[in-house]
Image 1 (cartoon, helix red, strand yellow):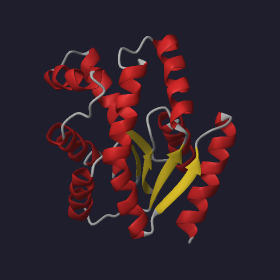
Image 2 (image 1 turned 120 degrees about the horizontal axis):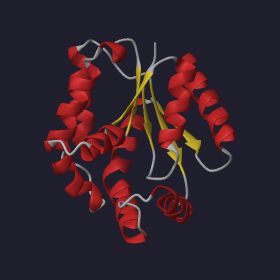
Image 3 (image 1 turned 180 degrees about the horizontal axis):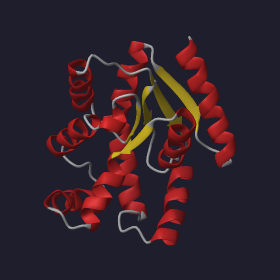
Image 4 (image 1 turned 30 degrees about the vertical axis):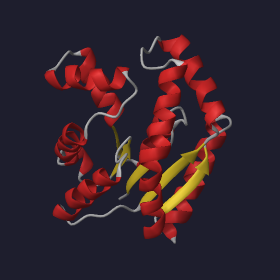
Length: 192
């Protein structure tokens, strides 16, 4: 059973690696971004609220995100392990996740951070925007999202590093090579 987070800047390959890792470990991948996009596409009240923030490159407010994650982690497929992708992004969300896990007498096993150079991330995200037509991927919004990541999410990374459960992996390179590095790092972290 593995309970873990994958953290990294926008465009670092979190979604791709989350899918691969969850398959290999046999745990559900829970992506807040995917849940938000599904709600936006379905034009649900949550989706309409989230869209305003997403289109500006801002984080969806903690109050909305925390409720969604709390509800999602109570579902049966997450009871025996999970991989969270895109949450927590702020130290307040770390506190909320700690409360959620403590209520179920659980804790995180590992926090995996994918690292990458900002200029490489901008190049990747602009390429993805051309392929997928995502409205939230233009250079101004991308750089804003990277600034938010550095300002708000790096303190999250620091907190998990203090707890001794942070593992960093270079997210640049061939997808299979990155996956191999990730799986090696997870194995080392969870067997320590």
